[in-house]
Length: 404
Image (cartoon, rainbow, N blue to C red; front, side, top):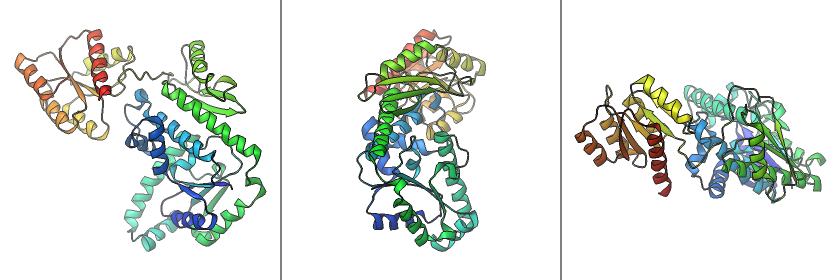
């Protein structure tokens, strides 16, 4: 039997449509939570980390850690592994957008409605006030707009070009919406065929190659057909031949891969430079120092050694960031206006003890060092610091984190 992918807006009665379809078709439900759990098992990443992929607010460290791209790749593999089993699935939620290749027996459905009808549903069926409904819809629509744009390049998450069917459920009604989807499921064009099964296998192969690449720090677009894998690079590359060789060395030995083509996409000449992620190095480093010129220069020097970092200029900003976007290692100045470094260290080690903190100061005393080490600092360094010493200390701090 065919599979159904359903993507919907908030307060569009999608839950009712899904429930009816499950009852009438016998399909097995696959939700965001299901695939997050599967992706975590496949990748070794935490469910919490993978779940963040759905958020429109990317981590400030993501350009170094590639956590979002890695999460998406493993979610896609989790979906692909389910689709090839041929068990008749109904996939509902964010994950319904993960299908990156055409499979003719997969019916893609969008359930949406105009704002006023969604407000009426929220008020009459959910007991939500109009003000709260509008707020919730705006937030949910933003999440889905960003998600769809990142996966497909489309600015409108409800555009008909992404789906086989777009159903305005308020006008159509739940009963008729279900009937329309079931009718389309009976269409000969959506039936399972030998060719469509091969297309599902192609999607699985592409997903396997993608996860193999992200596991080695590479973020490229992958497609596959009959054993031919195409890797698309959409960022400026400094050493093209070396990158192509490295990608081939990862992809070509994989089971099912007959040949690999490397293509440079339309964004090849963007200013953003392609960077391979090195998982042996820390990627979530926070620099905290009120000396702006010094800390910016330090950040640039670390980046030259493939150590990406984010900069804040006071203790309060550092503590706010730690609440929302936990770094792995913090390089912290002691003498700052407002909340000083010792107090930041104390609070961080109380609330986030797994964060390793390296003190870097130009004015600290022996007593300061004693206090910092007792509070749990990983190291205590003096300005001006030898960049090689700091780099080595950062790597040692990260190695300690990975041992846990």
